[in-house]
Length: 141
Image (tube, rainbow, N blue to C red; front, side, top):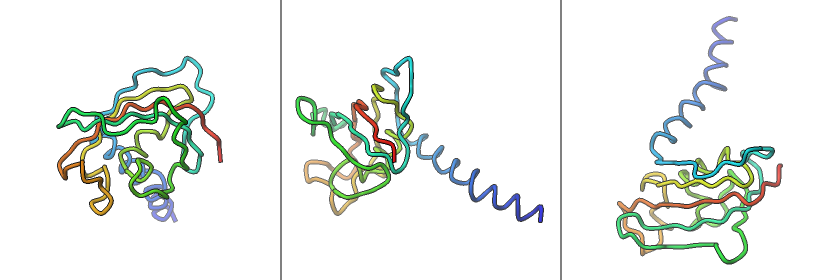
């Protein structure tokens, strides 16, 4: 019975947190601004409203932005628009745990970026993508 309990803990708690820790190691992520009060925190299943600007790190050019328009809205953990950031493991990891009003700067390596089949042609296979992300609103699931 004790071994079953230990195994269950490992599968449910320890193993997923190690996987997330590995993803975080691969990202170059910096919190640029964190509000003094953090009432809503983004987690799987939440509907997120974000503004972002992305840059091709190697080329040094802006790739895409939502600034000046409506925020980008997506459900965290779901991948609907394959060529959008919501489907990038690195982007999902970067926004998980953000508060409303928080800003982060994250560089996503190719292995956590766009899938090969949907990667826009402007992005080379070895390109790192820099995102400036601002969490506008969180609708809890």
